[in-house]
View 1 (cartoon, rainbow, N blue to C red):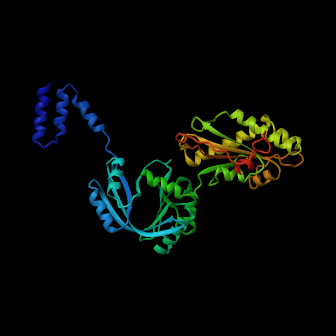
View 2 (cartoon, rainbow, N blue to C red):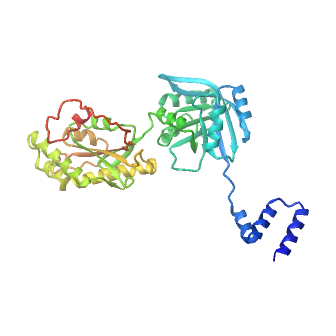
View 3 (tube, helix red, strand yellow):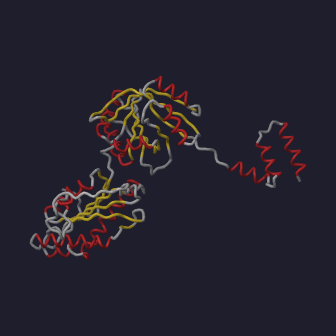
Amino acid sequence: WARPLLARACMLHRLGTRPVTRLLLLSSLRGSSVRGSLRTAMAMPSPPVLRVTTTEESSSAAERLCEALGFATQVTREEIHSFYWWEGAVQSEPEVRVSFETSEPFESVLRAVEAAHSYDVPMILADTSDKGAAHWKGVIRPLDGGAKAGAALAERLAASRLVACAQVAPDGSIAVKTVASARLAVARAAEEEGGGAVAWSPVTGNAAYLRWLEEECVAAPRFVVAADGHAAPSAQTAKDFLLSRPGGAYTTARTSGGGRSVFEWETHVERTAASVGSMLAAGGGGAAELQAALGTAAGLRPRLDAAVAAAVREYMREFGRRVGGAGELKLTLVVNWGEAAEAAKEGAGCAEAAPDGSLLGSVGCHVAPLPPLPDPPIRAEVRGAPRANAAAKESRWAAG
């Protein structure tokens, strides 16, 4: 069987066939099927082509960078004007944007660009197809006022702390770098200025730049707050959340199973109900309806379940299934009644009332990524005064 195959290979060689034919022949002579080897060779996927973008401080620096990247193809260079926040104010400076394509592994690209770049922490971004990505690039089409109007909007976006940087091209188009949760607010700002829809692209990049990006987008919603079943993204921290709902009973919990359940949930429900009951008793007993609805585990459990479910569902919808460094979520819950409940319910539209019209309280939930465990050694520090009511976890004391 090998003789006809050898003759066929010699003919193909004379016709100028690539060396892969000889490799397949050798594979066949070692006992493999030519047909099977050909199928394997044809099935091997081509390496993905990446579109990478960075910026340099000057044309000469951009030229040196391009000369060092021998693997780059489809290279473009464009003068831009960058706006970003630094030392308490918006800064602006000219830069040169360099974009190129490559099929090299992204880690190799990062090392090569970082080695040749003039910045200590350069921006090195590559487009991805991950719609659940945490980091995004948006392009706002040129405004009617051209580059001048684009610069004004870019400065406004940088000042709002919704984007880490906004880069204006000569035609007035703006490229912004931000986090996923800020896209809606950025799009609204662009629409108000007549910029129309923003073309969004998920990106990945060098870790140092992505950390800076996240730190700079301080106004972007990073959390979710739910009040009586109504949930929405929020920039409010857990402490701010408790401060906004003083005089209530609180608890903090964590999820398990990637946000699918709450660790020791029954204990949290019973502890929170006991705190409410103790605080109501210390305040004069409270209405019987309040005690039954909020001061017992049976009455409070459905309200807590609804608050947690709404908050976690909205967090997963808004931020994808990306959770914190520990892979879970941190939950902060607070139960209010009386005037504090009325303030918390303002605009919620779902107040539950007793037959005489008095409010039966409000239940809120704050969701944030659970931070990773700190590296040892771990030090514990005790601050502040003890709780006035040792039997109750009161939100004002926790946030103080």
